Image (cartoon, rainbow, N blue to C red; front, side, top):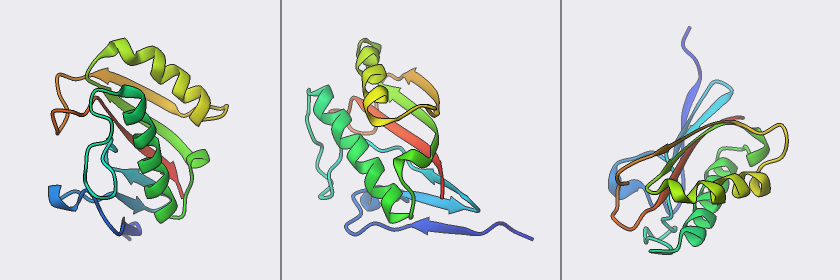
Length: 129
């Protein structure tokens, strides 16, 4: 017997031009694609402004979670990609603001680049539905 699976749909979907689904529900788990500082119109938010980008990333995560019938308090795992690990203290502070105890499991890595040159942070999440 195969597990229930369903794609998460957004309208408008800023990831559609890149042939990426916003996320998938598989059984009781939700797997989000990496969310970056791209608004609903597909434009990069806050070039050279890490704080603005991070705020947009969390806004996008909330939007996809809501579309799937979940919420940030259901997140169990995050993976954070930074182009500059100097922003790590801002990530720690953001986790304290965005999440509550018990905090999700977390992996953070520095990468050379993200999909678009102006992007500085991307976060993907796994959440319960």
